[in-house]
Image 1 (cartoon, rainbow, N blue to C red):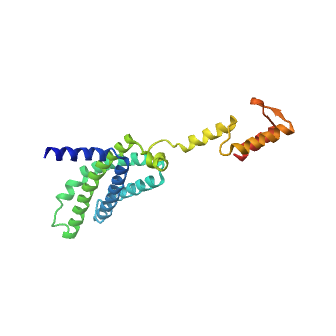
Image 2: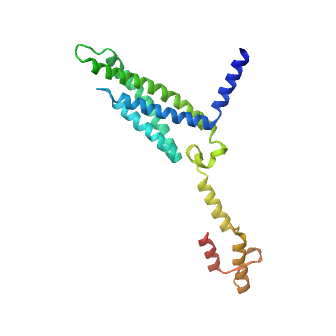
Image 3: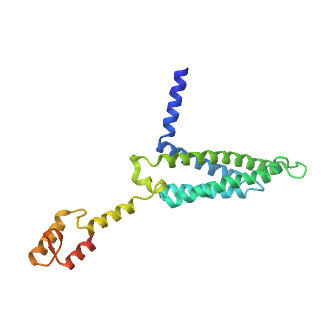
Length: 215
C-alpha cells in the first residue's frame, strides 16, 4: 500500500513538472469555464459576471493560440480581476439568490438563478485552480520540444534577438547564409580595386551597401 502511494505521488509530482501536461490541462479548464459561463448566462438575473468571465476565457484561448507574451500578461491581469469580481459577486448576490422568496417568483425563475449561482461557484473554483497552474507554468517555462512555438507566450521573444544578432554579424563582416556568395562579391571588388577594409580585403562602399541591403 505504501509503495502504491509513493508511486502515485511521484507520478503526480512528475506530471506537475511537465509543461506540456500543464498547458493541455489549463486549456481544458478554460473550455470548462466557457461551458459554465454559457450555462450560467441562462439565469434570469445577475448574469453579467458570467458574460465577463466568458469573454476572459475566450481571450485566454486567443492568447495561447497566438503565443503572444503581451496577451499572456494581459490574460494574467484579467484572471486576477476576474477572481476579485467573483468574490465581490458572491458577497453581494449569493445570499439574496439563495434565500429568494418562492411566493414572489416562479419556480423556473428561482431555478435559473440558483443554476447561475452554482455555475458561478464551479467556474470560480476552476479559475482559482487555473491560476495555480499558470503560475507553475510560468516557473517551469516552455519545454525544449516546442520551444519556438511557445517561447514568446511565456518568455521574452527570441526571434527579435536572433534578428538583431544576425544584423550585427552582417555589419561586423560575417556572412549569414552563404559565405561563398559574399566572398565572391568581395573578391570581385578586390580585383577591380576599391577602398581597403580590415583583413586585407578590398570592397567599394557601394558594394558593401549592396551586401547589407540584400541581407
